[in-house]
Length: 360
Image (cartoon, rainbow, N blue to C red):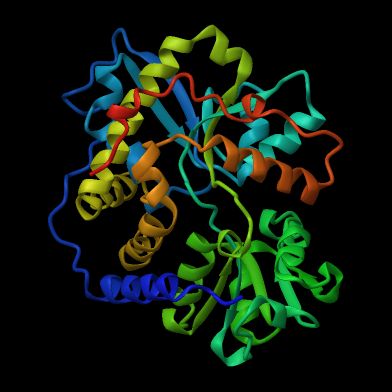
């Protein structure tokens, strides 16, 4: 199976949009503690961990902070960088953060190993998973079946790599027919560019921008996204402890009301709100590459965030049957002893009403 022409067209359109985009205007970023909309007195603090370094993918959260949406709900939300889903999930479970972003399927595995401190997803950020395998046109690999006999590269704990057996079975090849080369995360894309591997696994929103940063033209990247080849995966979610959710339901309802507004604003004015994030990052000492961050968000918006399903069910929610299927696929892929129920994985009871979560 090859990637659908419509998906390929979206990638090419994204490249053209990113190349022609000029970073002008945009809301000026203000740190939460300095903004006139916010008054620390009386606000309830909530600590949030990102999944990785701050990037354009975090625009909705930062937008909700900068525009005072959390403060209007009586919350003072602060965030810190993450070090990958596994690390974020462990720290949320340990109480270092009240909530944060992580992979719900890594959370399933964590819960299986740590039943005394169960976690649950309360908002789905990515309606489709960014997991995929990526190669280059020059490799002559035009469909997943041609990966058989090739050398693939990824860090040892990479979630898409760990789900490779499920993907391989879906596309009709023996999971053991490829050779895996293990490397540090920062070497993944360079190894592909240098020809030391034939393909890599990873997140679309990191692998593709990193390849472009390394000098590869977007149209020369051949992506095989897992959701295009039989997997029903959702992507990262807002995750918290079940016990904390029971103790503070009103605070989490308030968080989600403000967070949804941040998402809606980002979808309506992606460029302006992303520029505000870049300004805030710079003020905090982190200088981001504007063109790469633009590309990252441009790729993600139609493929991961604003899908046909989201237009039907609203932001943050799931289709139960699809989530059930994805849970079963991951339990099989990770070799877990038991399959959790939908309710143990996702609790949508605190989401704002559907009418308040719709997008134009």
